[in-house]
Amino acid sequence: MTNKKEQVTGNKGRRFHYAFFLCSLFFACSSAPKNTGDVYDMRKDAEVQIEMGNAQADRGNYDTALVFINEAMRLAVITDNSSLLIRSGISLGNVLFELGNTEDAFKAWNKALEEANLTGKNEFAAVCRVYIARGKLLSRDAAQSVRDDVNRELALLKSDEMYIALAWTVIGLAEKELGRYDAAEDAVKRALAIHEKNHSLELAAYDWFMIASFRSLSGNSGGAIRALENAIEYDRRTENSWGLANDWQALGDVQKKAGNLDAAGAAYSRAANIYRAIGNAEAAERALKRRE
Image (cartoon, rainbow, N blue to C red; front, side):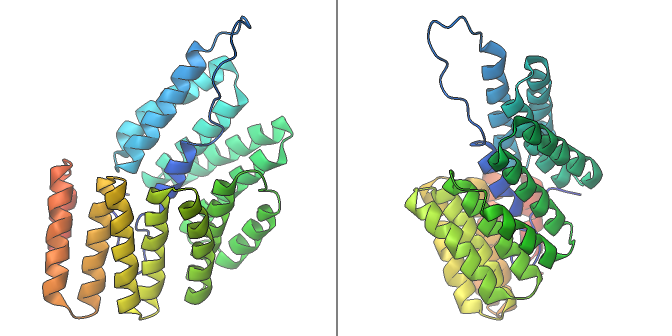
């Protein structure tokens, strides 16, 4: 699998961006207590490695991300830290999935779930199961079963709104696979409300990106364009260059589908300029080829 981002009109698009962003929050370390005699050096280093790995993955640099996350996993093992084992395992699964190594991705996610079960904390395990369900959905497994499974996990996700939002996002993607585009939009708008309330603008941009996909698939090109304009606004506010390039490329796809070839060409060119400016000439070339 390459790391290209596919059309908003129905393929993977930016779907895993959310997973990487949330892994940056997952079981984040609190500051170390003073004068306890504890040593936190390796655990802090592991946190940094996970954050750097997720940041690289957000930019589509999956091979580089894998280096950081594998080091985080090594540090998690030698410190025997459950939270780090879970968090690095989920990140590892996400990167492996993007690299096309689906079998090992599920092994990593399931190993994280096993560790979560050992903690005896149901919410940790529920979060892991939501990530596994997300992977099954993107692997085109039965969407109805994924939707039902994640609905059950929602009852366990009580303390962290961001993971409740993740669950609604996965439900929305499942509804999309089932062809229920209005239900998909309703689910993702529940996530959007949480993200906007918490000023998580980058995630709100991703929500609007998904909503644009649902609207485009249902034939509502005008609504898809408005949704992408909202995504662009939020990605600009957070200076999310990779997201902006994907937004403009998706806008080109929608305009092209609607027969607005001049507007499509302008959007593709803008996407290509951003890809090129962030050092991804290959993605820039692919964006320009979409005009054909």
